[in-house]
Image (cartoon, rainbow, N blue to C red; front, top):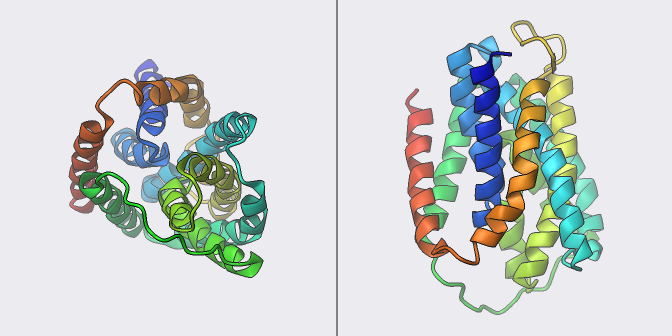
Length: 266
């Protein structure tokens, strides 16, 4: 690995860790577009650049998600009674989403991710202070599994831990923000595990993938990004209490929209 390539992975990991802690949008929203551009510049992945970026992001989220889940659990921030009914659907959905992504043309997958970024960016730009609404009751186990399958499939398809989808769902059903974030983090771990496994299986023996990769997961990038991202996520959370996060969220949302446009028209 070239020194400049290693430095790029460390920088991506550091940025994703800080921004995930600062904005709560998840590291995948940062890692995937950065890896798409970097892998393209390095000509890594051949016809499968988008799949390699998404699969590598999910494998990295396994490590960051485990650390985040443990931290929230220690603070009683995880509603395990909600997580466990979610898990079967999440696993099935994430595996299915990853397998589908493995057979999509890389350009299509890149544009799907761009649309997702546009959604996240628009949400960050338009979200005002939270308004109190009448909470809807949580669905039963079958309902939670069904919702989990949808969240898992979309999250694996675009290489995220699912917080952008899970947290709003939990808030609508009366779960306090602190527990919604912690529960979402716990749900993100099976998404990342099943999604990464799906990308490994769907990319197995594909031609044009770099050495030291397993299917669509490129391990040198995973290790380097984990080294940088895991220590810096708590820093982002601390900065959230001292910086003007409302303004920064809108600036970050605007940046995501610019990146989405760049990916659409590549």
